[in-house]
Amino acid sequence: MRDSRRIRTLVVDEHTRYLWRVRHRHGDRERPCAEVLGLNRDGVHTRIVFLAGPGRYAGDGGYTHSGGVGDRDHHLNLHEPGVVRALVDEAGRRGLLASGGEVDGWELIAAVAEASAGE
Image (cartoon, rainbow, N blue to C red):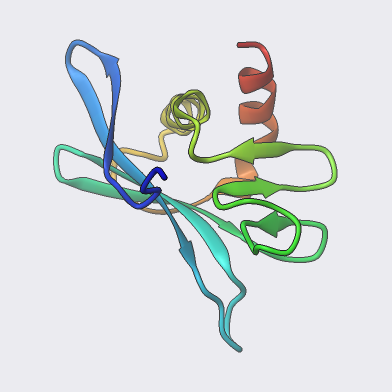
């Protein structure tokens, strides 16, 4: 069985590499559960976060698998390197990776699902 918590490497080009992993963040009364894609490049940590909510699922176990996120129109498997690459590309185009921190994954899902479907 594959260890989904392991840190993996995404090679973008000969000068750009990201360490990445996917984890589930359990919710509480203050916030819902979330699937989190953690990225690290040259010490800059970015978390692309998909919070579960009405019409949105985020690896909550009832209807999807670990790393599965989606809404009524899109589904992504965050454990797939091609999906991670599409997220990195889209977030990079939008300038969301330079300073690190948390990024709302739902803002990226439509573009990433379209890019991933074209593979």
